[in-house]
Length: 120
Image (cartoon, rainbow, N blue to C red; front, side, top):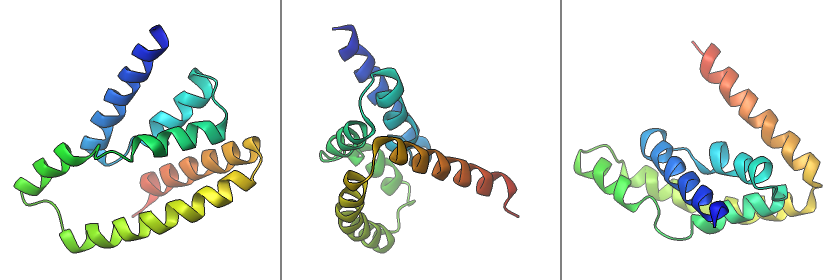
């Protein structure tokens, strides 16, 4: 039961971050599923993707849309890219060892953080 409460709190936290910054699954959910709930990297990524199947961003997106902050054309192209990219990304990820997947993910987070800190 406690594990379910933790997962719900994780979802709320990721939703908050998603609404604020457009992030959540990769930066918060996946690491906590791996290190907090002891899921394999593949289980964590798959579980995070499965959670995205429902319209989880709908309410946040509606708020941004009402305030004029969504570019529909860009969003549609991103959605098409995400649709195809998620398929191929899953195929590649499943072919990797868990430790390789963790290291690649960690490297991506470090690279993104360094780029954000040191860009001009």
